[in-house]
Length: 388
Image (cartoon, rainbow, N blue to C red; front, side, top):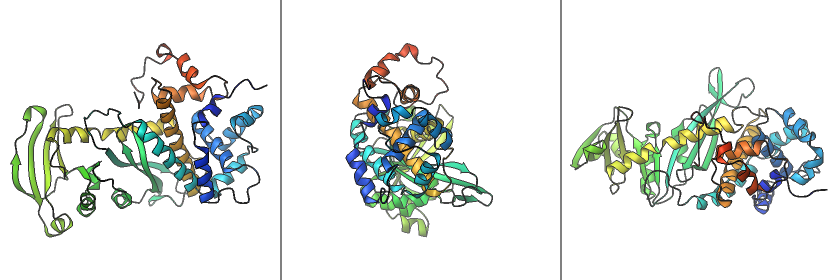
């Protein structure tokens, strides 16, 4: 007799199933499917992410070993390694990409007032990419170099809450700067880039859209100083200049004025030069905002450590993108649960607890209370923490 829902079922109850069904219908995901629906596929892959399964055979063994509990977990279809592999290969990955965007839309308002180190009214985003190495003979579509395969995860991260608002998956040979063309710019928001994204034509489009950018300048950057503004050198700001670009093509690509800020990072003993089209924020705030760009580097390292996105269950492009988007969905789902249940736990701790408790029939809120701070590892200096 079932005396309550499993932890896995309670977690999945936070998902808007009606929206998931709309995503399925949009791409005809269940067309001519008699068993093992898209929902079964999603639940099986979400289970694999939460429990760190190594392979399709591993997923099959774990779920079949708890066959009597699968119905109460919401899985109605028969879990088979071949069936799951086929589903990952042929069912449109955009179903799960669109569903992840639905969850992102739900999560962002929950973190609107989240502090990320800088007092700021408007939204702030960091945009960057990370490379995941692949075997070129197994993933021939993921070309990177002559004898090397890889994919790149291009991510736009909302600094409030470290929520990924956009994710683009491309073969490794696609240069990061090309993805600036895919950004849907939010007027009034601030976009933070490293110097690899320095393309004045594309940055000018962001400027024309009414948004702001902060980017590191390259060493060969040519400009003409128009005038300098006073600075507080005690904070590390060495200069704050209003400039215009030199060079025929650079000036043609970006005809407007820019702000150039030189900053000395005493902690790292490093001099940095920033360019921005924001003329109102203090120079030190611009430098602090760029420092917050490190959160996206932390995000990449964190998901590589704690989600299954470095080893894939399939070799086709569709299977890889399906797995990445379901991993992103699980990440955002746990972030939503954390806020809605008002839990004082790091995301790392929550995932560790969930990984060994999915078949338990304990109320979700009680589950995390049972694992008090005294049960968390003291030696956590090497763990990457988000949502502290």
